[in-house]
Amino acid sequence: MTPDQWIAFFAAIVGGALRVGTPFLFVSLGECLTEKSGRINLGLEGVLVLSAMASFGGAYLSGSPWIGVLVGALAGALLAALHGVLCSLNRVNDVATGIALMLLGTGLAFYLGKPLIQPQAPQIPSIPLGNWSDISAVRAALQINALVPIGVLLAVAMWWGFARTRAGLLVRMAGDSANATRALGYSVSGIRIAATAAGGFIAGLGGASLTLFYPGSWNEGISSGQGLIAVALVIFARWSPLRCVGAALLFGGAGAIGPALQSIGVGWGYHLFNTVPYVLTLVILVLTCKPGSVAAGTPGELSSTR
Image 1 (spheres, rainbow, N blue to C red):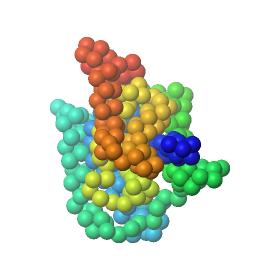
Image 2 (image 1 turned 180 degrees about the vertical axis):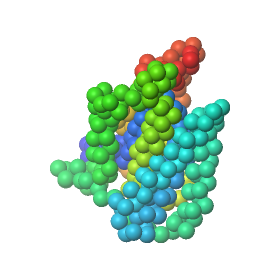
Image 3 (image 1 turned 90 degrees about the vertical axis):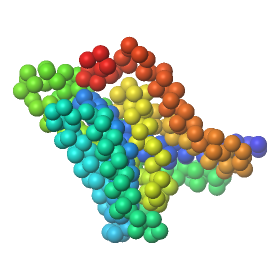
Image 4 (image 1 turned 30 degrees about the horizontal axis):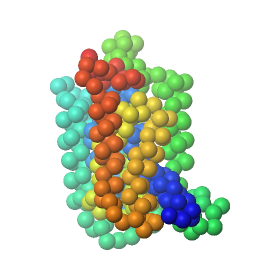
């Protein structure tokens, strides 16, 4: 490859990491908040798909991408809040409820979103980071989603909030010890419902980025399992919002390898490289989920030893 091709290839990887990693970032931050409170939401795939459809529909009907973003985030919050309320009932299992909500969310999205498959909706504006280069491929690759800076700031705010605020302390306490939380007079169920709903709102921003930026349209295969992958991503990030940013970029870069090779004319193995994020997920789960051990940073209520 020529030097320009190498530059274009690496720019495509970086740009792809930012584009593909944006949904991972928001969904992982949402799941991080949920799990910090001591609850697992495996329904995030349904949240992501439903919010993606709702965002596209909101933008299409209103003519504003930002209204679409808000509609998608609210749809994600509502579905996640339902999960939180159901899981607060006696003898209700988080995992089983999450799977049921995943099916509900995707089913609603597919049913309500059928009229939205053909239309085009206004898109979230992009931020040009490649104007320093004369290479058109570099400039095109470094057009990033305007939601990316919001996601990074949100990660920093969550990190600071967990460490320095009363609300963050309550979330962490509910996740580490439900008995201690009750002993201090706080409602464990109330904290977890609020954290789960807020996590769904954040994950909904990831759904908005799917249909309103990249790939920028609504179809029934829009998510490709990113909501489920985000659960493994949170484990990989050790429940740290800041590490979720790096993990999202890693997964995004892995998903961008195939398109980056195709952009410089390398067509062989395209579909094989598209499996890299899923292989990476399996590797992470094998390395971090060892029988009889608890991953560092695991909230106490999620520990397998409890």
